[in-house]
Length: 375
Ligand SMILES: NC(=O)c1ccc[n+]([C@@H]2O[C@H](COP(=O)([O-])OP(=O)(O)OC[C@H]3O[C@@H](n4cnc5c(N)ncnc54)[C@H](O)[C@@H]3O)[C@@H](O)[C@H]2O)c1
Image 1 (tube, rainbow, N blue to C red):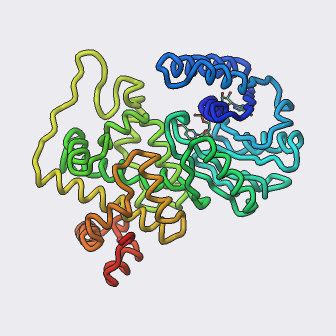
Image 2: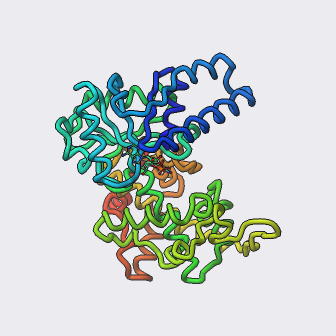
Image 3: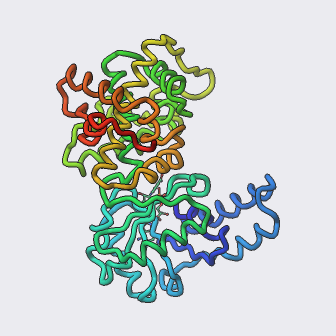
């Protein structure tokens, strides 16, 4: 992630310093950045001048001390709280008092990383999506102690890098990694109940929902190791909330090393001679699968709005720009009709008797008052 973020910054004209604790990793980053810029130049996406200017903005440094002139440091190191805290303590002794310290963490609380700093008011989450050079979304997450001016500066710097910024509350999974959980979890649940197989569920969500990839194709693409760990982390941090509960199915794939495309096998098999099974293209079944998954996704987005995780515009932008959803989920709720979403959830709640299907109180109130999100 670090080299992708550095490329975005350098291409936007910022003098960018890259440090890694392992010299070998730093060399790897240098080689991959050179190759990436060359590829862009070969495709005509950047001019030779832009290529050389970007190169001159990049400085690969072999000591943390050389970050002393930076006005913003974005940490993208190993996802271990204590290791990150130690790095920030070291950085505080090096950078100026006005330097913004930021983390690209996907799963740690901003408050917990800020807690050991001398000046927690300068600390903030700046969460990019992989690959950082391509994905337009960046979630900016102020912690409890973050100064308003630091939030505004972070927002304006990242916007000037050509990214779309959304602001999220410091809660597990921020926006995207929380709201998207049902796309995977409910799809796996439908398969576990043997209502439909993986190929049919993928077909249903692409055909009736217009999603670019079905949930099983997407999990195999992301990697089941990564997707499983995110699910487990969000579930644990939400004190075992049943909506986020991981599945044994995915845990087994992860344990077996069936991590998806990168390991040749996940929900599907990949490689020479391997083809995906055919979907059972049954309209009523497809519609049922789509309505069930979209109702769960919309419920999560509404709950996030209700709890002030982000504004409705930022919630919708995040899902469109961070995971390529064809529509924002609150826009989608208006399109389907809030009463229909509520009926789907109430039917599921009644049939299963499980807490995971309980409709958000805001959805219930809005239906009662005949309200919509946008019109
Ligand atoms: N990979 C993703 O899809 C993704 C997406 C969004 C956010 N993130 C977050 O970005 C961060 C990095 O993830 P990654 O996938 O790029 O990890 P990675 O393991 O590929 O890279 C981490 C790098 O940090 C270096 N490092 C470790 N400890 C260090 C230290 N003390 N000082 C300096 N360098 C050190 C390592 O040598 C390594 O090169 C994590 O916090 C992760 O949660 C990852």
